[in-house]
Image (cartoon, rainbow, N blue to C red; front, top):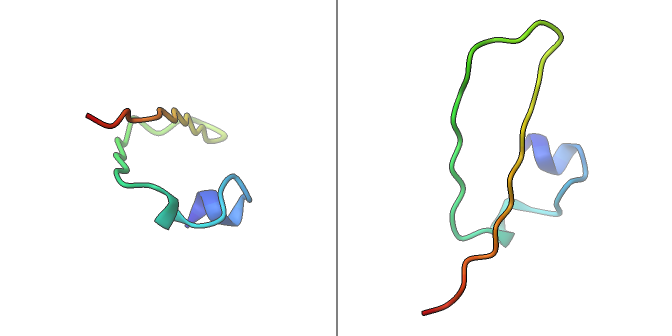
Length: 41
């Protein structure tokens, strides 16, 4: 929902797999995003 709100994507229905990993809190906040295309077999 945060990525939709930030207008990075239209809806998370666009993705077949989403992995979220929480790290240590960072003063001021931080977000890292990696997007990969998964090739069909």
